[in-house]
Length: 210
Image (cartoon, rainbow, N blue to C red; front, side):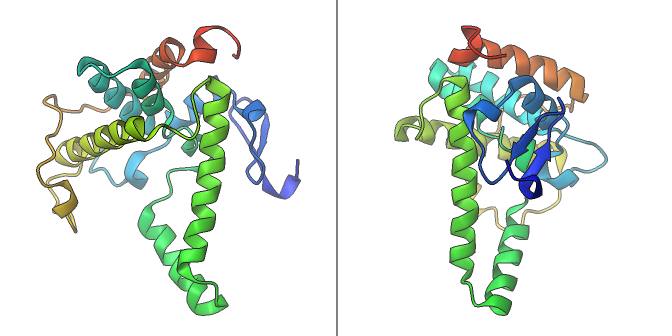
């Protein structure tokens, strides 16, 4: 473990962000942190909406609609790396990539590829730790993406104060969830996400990991 790239987690343990492994993934700690992480970089109007609630509401919607445990389980964990890598807004990544390209000669595409590699390594570690396949099967990936978009459309409707979106065209025709989102305190996010995780994730359900 390299001190320069080690992040301290809620349970006091360290994770080397440059070399994350399944052994580093402690579900209660990561769940606590994603349930304290503000979605949309905190830009929801007059309220705080946590990544953990996004995971719970999306998973519950999938289960109501008949998703398999594998599909729902993959949704439960798809933002877990944000527990240690944060919910970094895409415009920020693009801005840094462009600035590095102009100053250092490294192309923006190359920089984004490195970020994608890091994201994939972190997701792979999470999936191995909880007993889910990696890479995610393509049919499962499509379902997870669909419900992530459904959640986005619902969240924008309910949490962003009716502000216009800069480019709504990718979301045209996507139906939001029927219920209105009311943000929860982080403790409720933690409790509900924990219950879903231990219900759906094979290694947690079987007691192989904490």
